[in-house]
Image (cartoon, rainbow, N blue to C red; front, top):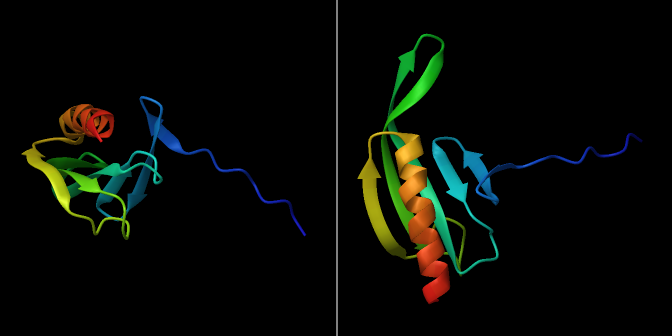
Length: 97
């Protein structure tokens, strides 16, 4: 039986990013809050899909993943600006918890 390979997670500023379809989860799954990024619109630029509209949500993570109450919500035009403001909101929410 082959040994299981250890997978490296994609991280941003030291916290893991997990993708499931058009939804990206950012943060540790055992923290009280988690950042959820939903890519609503995207366009094809050469051979790459680029996001055009992203919904940012800082959610309560005490129940089922992605089903908690929304603590803060906004919309941005690209993934970088969405995760940049979302990371700041998440850090603030965790500190105030």
